[in-house]
Image: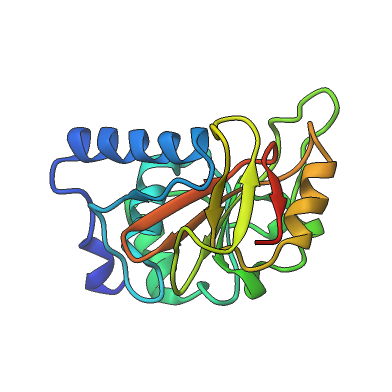
Length: 189
């Protein structure tokens, strides 16, 4: 194991994890709203926001898929040391991490079942930038509309049609995070 895998965790775990959990939940409860999320750092190409999110939500009982863009020995070692989350294939993942293109195809992930719609995957999409521009979002948690720079629109429109099944998404760039639950209506901006 590379020595850098031993670094980059929370400085004050209870406080940092609580802050990160609140930011992650706020982002999911208010789709399109960009939150600041930092406190952890992993080796490239994982952003501080994605590292902090996984340090907060992943544990030994949280299967994680690393898309080819993020499946590096350094990230595997870091995640194993800090979360001990089992690394699995896309079809078995509760969380998946990677760039939009590397996470494709979306039908590789669990979307839940009629009895258990919550047994679906959450994808953490690493972006070059994250801005309140682009696609228009409406739905639960949004007072009127929000805008978010999404990698495309059609995939999120198709995902919403699966409700109550479907995928949920976090988008990360640097220390920024936003979320898009399956309940959100997405239209081209």
